[in-house]
Amino acid sequence: MRAVLVVIFIIFTACSTSTTAHHAKKTQLPKYKPKSKNYITTALYKEYKKWYKTPYRYGGYNKNGIDCSSLIQRVYKDAFNIDIPRTTKQQAKVGYRVSKNSSKEGDLIFFKTGFSSRHSGIIIEKGRFIHASTKYGVCISHINNPYWRDKYWQTRRLLP
Image (cartoon, rainbow, N blue to C red; front, side, top):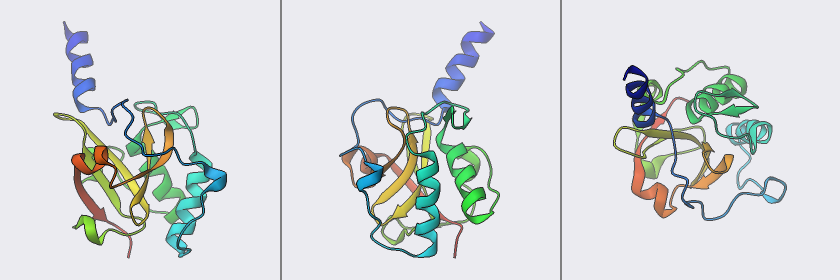
């Protein structure tokens, strides 16, 4: 009985995305050119190249598999030498809230993907964010894709 409760808890609190097709197009790393070249975007693309297509794994934290909150934690540490909490729940409390329309490179973006499940990513450029997708691994998605637009929760800023 206890094992069943643990499994149910993990399912309902996991950092996850649906496995339905909610990406307009998979980003092909070699063909994608950043629109802006400020230091934040440059640092984020460097990190993105390191993690590109790393598979999603709940609780994962390395190239064998990584989840969304661990990806954010690792990118922030490696790109900006900033320590942030490990879980999406804790990350949703850092920095300060900004509107979706005023989001910029480096902002954290959060989604409510289920009753009690959350998903997170990092804005890499206007309208795009890096995240660990259950279907595609580490990839870039569009914020205005209907799937993400409908599940948007909040954006938080840590960088100047």
